[in-house]
Every structure is written in structure tokens, then in C-alpha cells.
Image: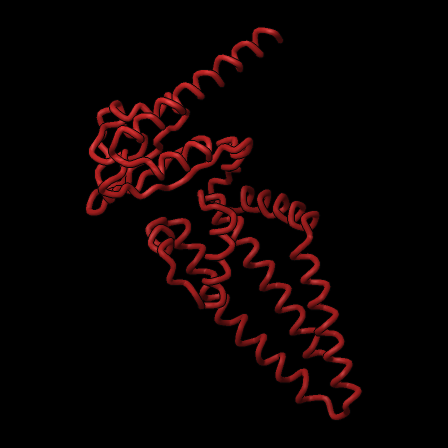
Length: 255
């Protein structure tokens, strides 16, 4: 019985630790889904070979979180396996073994419900965020709220191909602002990351640009090639954005 309770406690603690780490990683700018994946991967020591791992390890705060998770994960998994074995080895009777199994099954069912519950997730996220802000030096920010990431607004990374409409043009030439798109940064192999690039910054093939704006415009830009069709799409979304701003101004005046 003690082994079964210990196993349930360890699994619960492991879930809580990875949740804390995921929220901490999200506060460094990672998306929620990416933060959860990286936290679980680091804790279990499996699957931590994604393309995002370089971004994790090049960031001092993220690197510290992942390093701590790896250390805790090694101890937690070994202890959990030991408790699982003892749950069914130590008891002398079948009834005791079934009782231990019942504790584990019921406990995991409750834990699974808690993990899947939006109410629990929201409450836990608020509590963890407050604790991180109070007891750590992590810059706790709700980036989704800061960047207004709803109403179809997104932050996305885009790799520029050789035949892309974006390639070999400056930001002034592209005039993406008139489409409602802001280029937040340019990541170029072999060079330092260029944050908040100026209008004279040129986008080259194989650059990875970080952009902010409407998702529907992203989809259009992804498909544009260096021909007349690309310019047509650009003008279409420029007109659409101008119309949106006009409607917004009219609404504000009416208020």
C-alpha cells in the first residue's frame, strides 16, 4: 500500500513539475504547445532532438529550466519504476496486490482528469505564474495578451525560399506594413539575430523571419512567388487592410 501511494505521489509531483516548467518556458516566449512538449521531453529524457532544441539551449533562462528538468527527471523516473515494482512484489496476498493496483488506477484516473480539466489548468497556471514572479527572476509575461494573440492575430516564423516573393527585397520594397504585417526579426545563418529590423534591411533566401499580423495574410505570403501574381496578392491585401482601418476609424468616431 505504501509503495502504491508513493507511486501515485511521484507521478503527481512529476506532472506538477513539468507543468511549472512548461509555464516558465512559455513566459520566455515559447508557444504553449512547444513549451509543454519541451518540458515533457526534457523530464523524460526522450524526444529532445527537435529543431527547436537549439533555440532552447541558446537562451540562458530556458537552458537553466531544461537542465533542472533533466536532473529531476532522472531521479523521478527511477523512483517511480522502483515504487511500481514494489507495489506488486512486496504484498504477500493477492488482495493486497489488488488493493495497491486499485490505488494506482484510481489515483491516475483522478490525475488524468486534473490534467485534462480547463478549470484546473487555469487555476494552476495563475498560481504558478504568481509563484514564479515572486520567487524567481524569470520575466513573467503573458505574451499572448501583450501581443493580442486572438481575433486571428498570430506570431509566426517563415523560412524564405529562393523563389519567394520576399527574397532579395528590403522591408521598404516589400511594404508589408500596409498589409498589416510587422517583421519582428530576421534570423540568418552565420550572423547574429536581427531584432526589430529597419526598412533598409534586406530579406535573403534561407532567412527565417519572425512576423506578426493576421493569419490569412501569412497564408498568402507563404504562397507568393516572384511574378506578377505575387504583386497582385500584395495589392489585394493592402487594399483590404486600408479598408479595415477605414472601418475602424469610422467606428471610433461614432463612439
